[in-house]
Every structure is written in C-alpha cells, then in structure tokens.
Image (tube, rainbow, N blue to C red; front, side):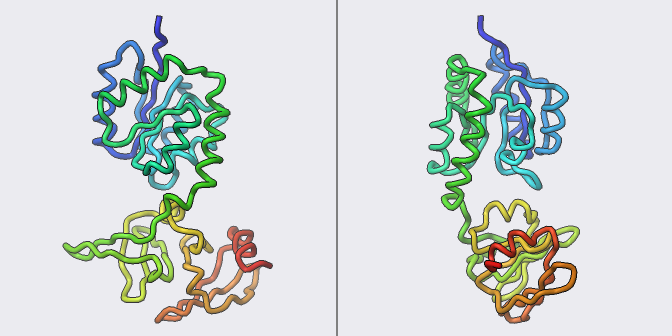
Length: 253
C-alpha cells in the first residue's frame, strides 16, 4: 500500500500555488495537502506546527529564500523544490536524491516525482538536504546575475551591474544607483544579496555597495566605518555594526 504524504505547498506566486494544487488532485493516493503558505516565514510556522511528511518548496521568495528556511528547521521533511534555476544548479538536486520541478510544472514531470517517492528512504532526507545546501553554496557563482532590469514609466531599462555603485533600501522600495541615474526596484535587498556577485557587499541593513566603486574607508565611532564611493555623487555611506565581520574580511583587517 502506497504511503499518503501529508503535504505543504510553500510558494509566493499565487498562480504557481494554484497550478500545483490542481495537479496534485491527480494523485489523491500520494499527496494530502494540509496547508499552503505564501512565503518562507509562514511556511516555517506551518511546518513546525503541522509536521508534514513532504513540502513543495519554492526557492526564490522575498525576504527569506527556500534554502534559508530549510536551514532554520529543526527537522527537515522530504523536499521537492519548485525552481526556475538553470541546468548547472539542477545537477546538485539530481545527485542528492531530492527532486525538483522546473516551472511551469507539467503533469508528466510531477508523475516522475511520484515515482521517485516510492523509492525514497526517509532517514536519508535531512542529511541529503544539508549536503545539497553545501553543494549549492559552493556553486553560487553559476547563478549570479550580471545585469538587472528596472522599470521607468512604460519602459524596461537594462543595467549592467558594473555600472551600479550601490543599492539603498527605503521603507517602500530599493534605489539602484547607476552611473547614468538612480532607478527604483521593488526587489528587496535580501533577495538581491543572494543574486549579486561577490564584488557586491552588504554594509548596512539598508545598503549594498559595489566594492569596485570604493574610493576610501575610514574608521568611525562605535566600531563603524564611513565608505566613500567614487561615483558621480561621491556617495558617503556609514556602515552598520552588525556587518563589521564581513567588512573587516573584505578590507583584510
């Protein structure tokens, strides 16, 4: 007799959640959806309370990613990732006995996940996922962005990262400071931080700088620093104390 898995769907995109719910109706003898979460924070809460056997987990979510949520869990259930990552990153999933579904999800691909579940050994799940997180962490550069798109009126503007001096968060949006002008994006700093290459450094809860633009760094009171950028505005940024460790590592102090 096949096991019926108590299942939670965690995805910030309503159409993706609705599509997956509809597809899972084709497998009533495999999945019993006990909850749906709209982000990783809500997902973590529901996992800890409801203790599912399995979760369908989106990777790219605002504020907290799917990977970060897994690292916070005391006990990790079986995970089937829902992702738009390229094939380089997907290799890590394939070698760790954890399945992934590439969006948009098809019924045929979901059937393959069901087939894999029948061969799955639950006691290996947590260790496999931890190994996966370590492997993906070592391959971060594969999926890093090299440019970004912002809206300006009805237009889409493509900006090369090499032309961006820093990002600064406000209460409602993030300012993208480029050589040409300042643009606005709704993508949160936490999400940008995951995607940006290693020459971008978070120095304050509201600021990420491009270290290639740094003119000088001066010590400031209360164990902080003032960083001056050689952009057109000669921006001056005071760092946050909680980012001291990464800043000192960068300036090799």
